[in-house]
Amino acid sequence: MLNLSGLTVNTNRYNIQSAQLHNTTGIKNAEQTQQPANHSNPLLQRAANVNIPSFGAANTIRTQLSGKDEQNKYNKLSSVLDKKSRKELNGLLKSGKLLNNSSNDGSTTLDNLYNIITKQGAEGIDRIKVAQDVIARITKPPLITQKFGDIPLNMQPEIISYEQSNGKNVSATDLDVKSSTCPAASIESSLARRMPAEFARMAEGLTSPKVSVEKTINVSDLSQNLVDIIWMLNEFGADYKFTNWNQFKVNLKPDNNAIIRARIQNDYKDPDERSVIDVLMQSTFMNIGAQNTYDSLIDKRVPKYNADDSGLIDIEKNFAEELATGKGKICVTYQKIDDNGKLVGYECEQNETLQHIEDTLAGGDDVIIGYTYCDENNNVIGGHEITIIGIETDKNGNKYFICNDTDDGINDYIKYSVAELLPIIHHAGIPKSVLVNNVEFIEGWKELMQIYKETRTQNEVQSAVNNNKLTVLNQSV
Image 1 (tube, one colour):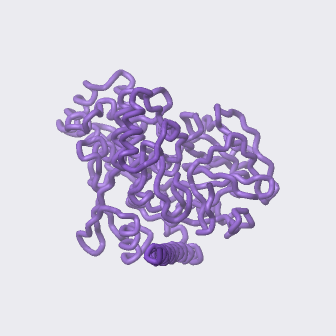
Image 2 (tube, helix red, strand yellow; image 1 turned 45 degrees about the horizontal axis):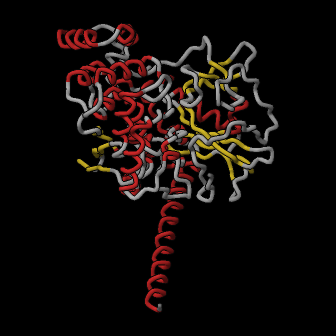
Image 3 (tube, rainbow, N blue to C red; image 1 turned 180 degrees about the vertical axis):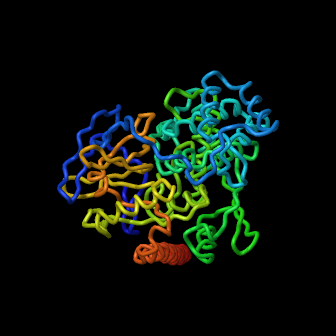
């Protein structure tokens, strides 16, 4: 379901098995070289023999253990891992990812992996498995998937009863989840690729008895001023506390039902399904964006800004991404979609959109984008989120985006023709520094915030009026 009245398009993956992409430039769809089951995107190609950008060129790369502490931690890790994970651990050391300290508290990937295997974990969670899953995902981020696991039949009655006791009208059908977590999975995969130490630190906290992780964030690192940041934190129900005027601590946690999903995956995970850490991390980002109303058991949330109870809209994904990474992003909307859900134009030229993406990549960030499916009449019929991590030019001068798609059934990076993908990009998270000469986009973001504020106020006023009418009616009866 789409609701475009708030200038947004829902960013979850829609269940469209044979959607035909259409755009206003008249460009034909690229030929698909490989199409996995149930994937309908005709732009997709497997990315083979491409140069994947460095995970963190701005960081100091260390590839050798230093001192007894690091050596002891490495040896302890190696002693509990399986053969595959030990090989990957060695690979992380050689690549510099193991001793990377891109975490919120300055700890290394090694420090946090060591904490995972030595500190107490949440009940029902095998922390050795968690460590191995974290190692695998830092080694190869495309392993991260949004595919939910099934709930065993013998457990379903108890879970349905539990949900119903909490006032939710849930049946077995609701437990058969198709997944709308592509925004959260995209954030997770980007975090694993760009900030491996922070990815491991979050994994440790989310699989600990607290099932949460605390982050310290500087206001100056975010995209908004102090007043707007405070409004956003309150609007989204974040658990935060300011330590001074430029810094606050925020406690990130999944919904209460995420640990149930995680325990099920701990014991019943099938190949190509989400791991325990995928469950908890994606549930955390979904819950942040959904104002603490997300339910991992049924993949639904209580909608605040539109009528759709699945996925996240662009502003929600952007807020979750900022808190997850501690880096400011502005959600730029590129497509013009009218009140009837029809694509009618663009906010800027395609070369400017491309420049925003290129400048973001050059600055060391990935670009999480939301793109739309349209029918032959340019009516938007669905959308999806993927992550652009680089750009490749072939010998003929054709450009391709190198991307990670958490819902394509391929455990590898993929290529999209730049000429084909650009016209269907609806929005993207772009650093404020990239938009410094594009005041209209910055002001547009503030305008979008104001629209949400006014919409909320109008809804509250209308609700109060309706309640008052009902009270009067009851009294008259």
